[in-house]
Length: 522
Image (tube, rainbow, N blue to C red; front, side, top):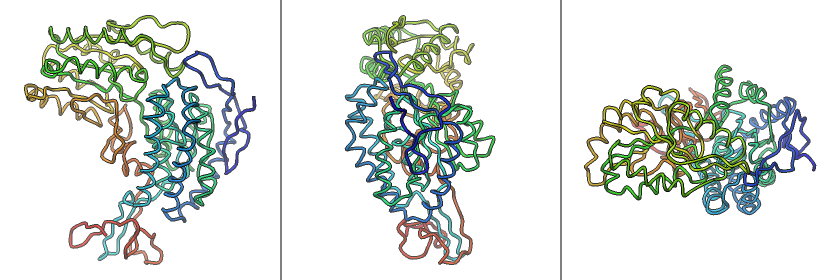
């Protein structure tokens, strides 16, 4: 079978391959036939040079051109929905319905269209004008953006379909995308639609480039290259920390989202009020899509009493009923089994779960337990991520013990607090909330951390090691766009040399202006 080409410098061409890899059918447990190329540095170098030229061209084009591209692209992806879903299903094992076709693909299209709307509106530029002093500033693109996607969201976080891609384009940057080896066909199908959409919108053909694979050393070299404006990475801690270190050492901008433990606190009043419903919610949150979400609950805190024990007994029965679930591939299976193995070696006891079968990439829904005293004694061994359909129950004996244990939880993307609706847990919740706020980017009340709305006020990021830097979000315009922008000030610059968004008159971006000691619109 012919090796798929890469998209570099505006053309499809063969890669200067160092190696190759095959995507996997996790349901069958067998590799697919296609051999995807792992590019050498010559491909990366050519892509970087082309992207630098594209950045200059994009800077001279109006925002409307990028908005048009994103809208045309969304339409083309929508027309290719059946092909995209089939490819994602074959390479990830994720369910066609509702997961891929009814949840993730619509989210992908909505994200791209939100980026188009934000681009056209121009509020992401945060333009500010002090007319008296003739000092003006706004946000502008950083230059080439590199996108490293994860394998668990082939559409919504895809190399050329996801939120990082859309946000980078919205800010006026060319993109070099590195496909994930777990779902490369999705990126290839989408990239063909990118090429047509760029032509239709009149953007440079080098605005988007696609590589199917890179050696780890070349990935680290890429994010540190002076021609790179910023990098967006979503994935595991090991790769994310290496890329973060390489980029930071070179003074390059990099945004990493690396998953987290996402603690869930279940207060006694909430269990007494609606324990059965919470058990259903927790089971669905841990086992939905085999638990392969960065927002999956990895720690569940509850009081060690008769009511808590009854709740967990019912929860264990639900987990046993789920049985074996298909993971994304052999790497995911190894990662999950390794995490569970480390937890058990540190003293965690298995409540539900079992041996992994030899065929396919399957793993049983797994429930483990420890006491808060054990966790306080061994935090480094027990506060580890088991990415997949597993979670750890933490039994607490007192509010003080709960607070001390929560304070040790590593920075998380989300944290859920379940309390009674009649007010009986309010005092306890008030003591816990500040601790959770310090450990997470998103505090959730009476819902699980999975299920994340794509809306402007949403925060998807958090303290290290869940993500870095912690201030901006990977979801929600305009914050996600501003990750790939820089602020530029024009001090006393003549009107004819100002960018359109900072000129006097009715600008398309509707900037903020400093008038009489107050910021006003328009």
